[in-house]
Image 1 (cartoon, rainbow over the protein chains, first blue to last red):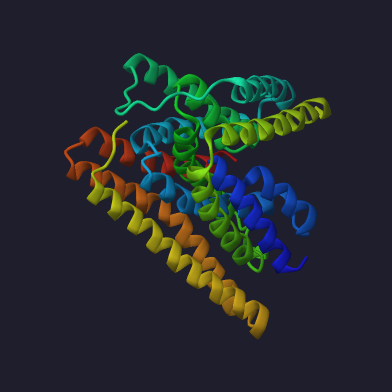
Image 2: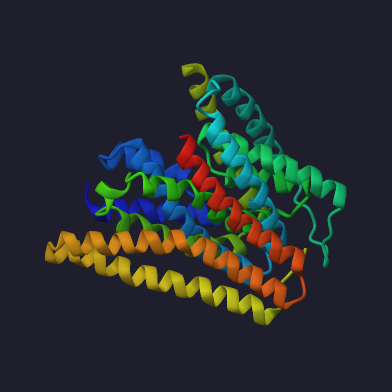
Length: 253
Length: 99
């Protein structure tokens, strides 16, 4: 496939990822595997590496606008990375079918909530209770575990968790998630790199990474300027799509 | 929500953008080498350097963030940043061993 097409696709994936605070793997992995003549593992390796760059590009926009909670992001990343590690190890022993159905139910509920709930107001100085934070860190660990088990990125779990669990306004949730996904993707990306999965794809890497950096920056700018209702609805649409994919995965066993 | 001071926030953004600019410059060079000069060896070497740079950027940015938090007298946050770096390293080693 022509590298210019890959670049165009990566810009679109980065745009949506930056806009919604995701890594972009949801879009770029199937696209690369279908049109890039490379294996799923190679696509996942490129996507993880590119999502670190996307996260860097989009999170700076959110940080500048004070829509990224660096403090919470660090704590989230700490527990989610530990969860992702446990999930990666567990994935060799556990059947994914039932987990896929449970995860589908969670994202269906999140999608409906995002589509129909009113956005939370932004208080001038936000605080969260200590007991709530402890619970949330535990949930972040479970989120990391699920993402490690099911091979889905963290963003699709973190944003609904912050919106529903911590009552974050949607743009602060996407902003904080944009920062976190770059940190959580690193562990996986290092493994793909050390295993040599990226060796035969080095001609595609520049087009994908450049596209996703450009798209991520644009997506971040769009994300802080768009009305929160639109962000919520686009995110809900993506969650319904992911719910469909998870049900299909579960039915395939 | 705990924010960095404006000055330290700017430093962190500057570091992130600097890494991105270097990565983009190298990627452009790799793209041009591959497409217009057919020099695949140099292009692949440049791509590999960019991948390593991106992978190293996470611990580098976390260490910088920990340092900035420490400058503002927030030791627990600096320790959390260091903890993430440690878990990333331990996680990488554990995944390497188990998978």
